Amino acid sequence: MSKTATLSRNRNGNGRNGNGHGRNGNGRAATAAASTPEVKNYITPHGYARLKTELSKLLDAERPELVKTIQWAASNGDRSENGDYIYGKKRLREIDRRIHYLNKRLDNAEVVDPARRGASEQIFFGATVTYAYVRGGREERTITIVGVDEVDVKRGQVSWLSPIARVLLKKHSGDVVILATPAGEAEIEIIGVRYRAPA
Image (cartoon, rainbow, N blue to C red; front, top):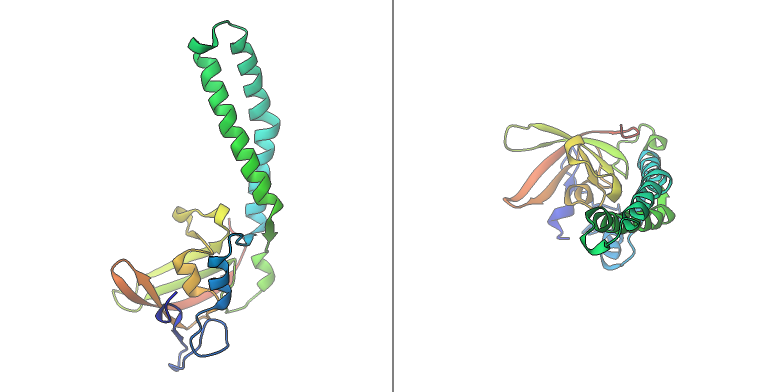
């Protein structure tokens, strides 16, 4: 991450780096996370519950029903021409891969409740942030920084590892930060920070 990507200024124009130490604010934690194969799996309580629900549905309903269908299809004779059997086995492999993935993600999850941050104006995981581009009409946008498994762009939920989140993390309401975009660098001003459970 470049120095400009983490540059921020408070309302008085004074420099403030991303972690409160040193001059460049290049964020050792972000660099370490990028170079480490096992990145922490932060997730909100809502996201954790959603993954648990999906896992339970796969284990208790979808997989047992599919196994029954496959057994029925297998009893009908030639499996090489049996569409129900072939599709069923393919779908079973997909379900088993998803179950394995969900188990691993849930086992490694670090649940962080954004509501416990209270009225903080500093941006951490789980923050809902309203910002505006300094140039270009100052149209306001609002995003919520969530776990990798919770991303829903249509609802404004972005991963804490996304470029916008990396630039915003540890900044404060009122800061202006530089965001690298495909069209070049853009200045954005943080207008508001709040913490609430994602809907």
